[in-house]
Image (cartoon, rainbow, N blue to C red; front, side, top):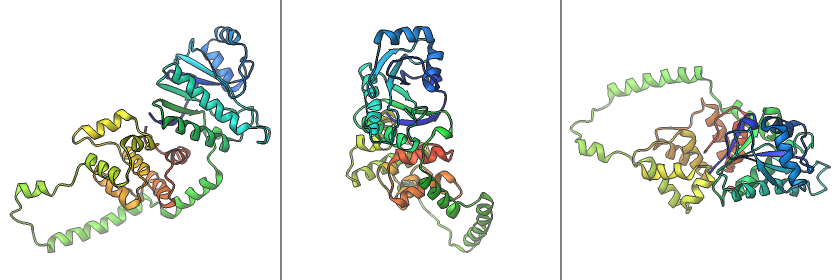
Length: 326
């Protein structure tokens, strides 16, 4: 199952488990920790935590969710940022990994994380985001779970300034305003009308010939690309951040047409170039357009040869665009 980045209040997430960025003493704190205690019921949750007593940095423990929509709360103390020389990156990775393993042990199908340690613990947001995404995505390559990375607002998000600037410049250079598109379309329509006046009509084409001219279905084209790229079905849908059930539906339901963002997710998974991406999109009735910022951002990453779908989703989230997969 996929990884989604969402802007929400983590205490309102309807998932099997939410993750609390706890302190080692498992006491009610501020920020995300304080919000979770208040929403769950501070007295009941504190009593449950007191029974556990302590949790080392990077480890994880579990309590009931009490008054939360989530069934469980997984508590993990992240590291305090001290410049990066005290195993902070390793400990932060352990917080995510041990939380995921604990959720798996309790048969959770969905889990929501905050960006651990980026509040009062001071971990740099860009580095913390990279660790969160890489650790979660590695876990999802071997396990089925729907994982949410929950951020309250853009200020808590950590896309690098260098990448943001680079994408912004690409959009400025390639994005075409709708007014310009409309003007160009009128010119093209005149040319098409002129062509139809001059062209020889196609006569006596039988129904069978028309049917034979139909292109392969989206499912057939996708499976052909998977075979040509030497990938397996499982590898393809996991790298596309696509749920296994959706992939099965696409594969088995004749005539099923997925959403555009789903088709592009497969293109990214298969590392298709722009022409190949449009070829796959055309089978579902879509194409990349310079009048769509979402499409321009996708084109940027393809041209850069950058096919990590989670990194692309980080950029799409920052620019308020739909995310791939999921």
